[in-house]
Length: 132
Image (cartoon, rainbow, N blue to C red; front, side, top):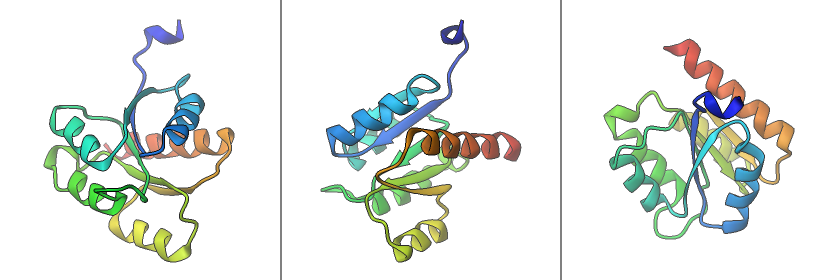
């Protein structure tokens, strides 16, 4: 029955396969998960028409880091309402402050517990619904 209801979409962006696997396993029962192994690939998915309900974005990635990826996502007018949350191993107040100043929906430090990420994702999704 649960599968018959259209799940909200989350785009996970991380260059580390293990991190993608962990996050996907924690979220896939409740959400439809799309995966990008780089910021560049995430931007390509979005330009090709994927409009997720949430983007969970790592910061430390080669080629195009999370900061640049965030800015490119925000530059796409059709994605202005899509929340972007950082999911990162950088556990520093300066980075977290910068993320919120940029307009991030949340800043989730790795490692995280399943209950915590599920609650935080749910809270972000509910804020997005109330905003519209």
